Image (tube, rainbow, N blue to C red; front, side):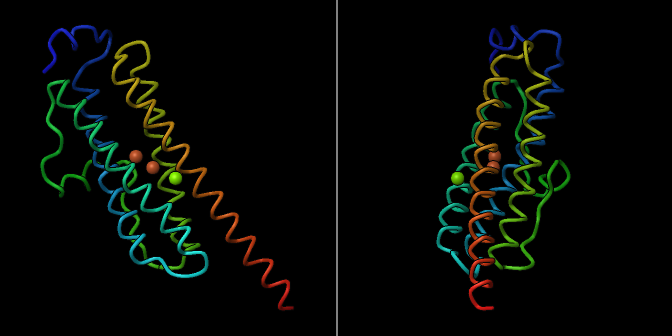
Length: 171
Ligand code: FE
Ligand code: FE
Ligand code: MG
């Protein structure tokens, strides 16, 4: 635990920060696995573009899990030790892919990113001016989640537009 490092946290209970970070940690692992398995099972039009994006996002979520775990340890906490705890602590849950179609997979993932944006926005509000180090980390992750949402939405728009064009040309 970073004693001097933690002494600069003001007006905020460290356990409150650790609890919030552990919830985000659970979200990151579930998001990682969701992207990992989506990239494996996705089917349909322009799926190669989707796979590239899903695999990149999986790697980002795992990197986020690393960043959050390291900060929990600095604060004197313990990152969740049992994967079963991911389901009891998660904010955003886990969206099991039921329909493997690229459009459905992208819709599920966009929902997940929108939830992640809310979670990190709240953690930024909690720590702003109180715990600068956590604030910096959650702000970096928040920027990634905003980029993730945008990437997926842009791909979703391209694919649905492409499908609409094809339908028009058939008729
Ligand atoms: Fe993430
Ligand atoms: Fe993300
Ligand atoms: Mg991306």
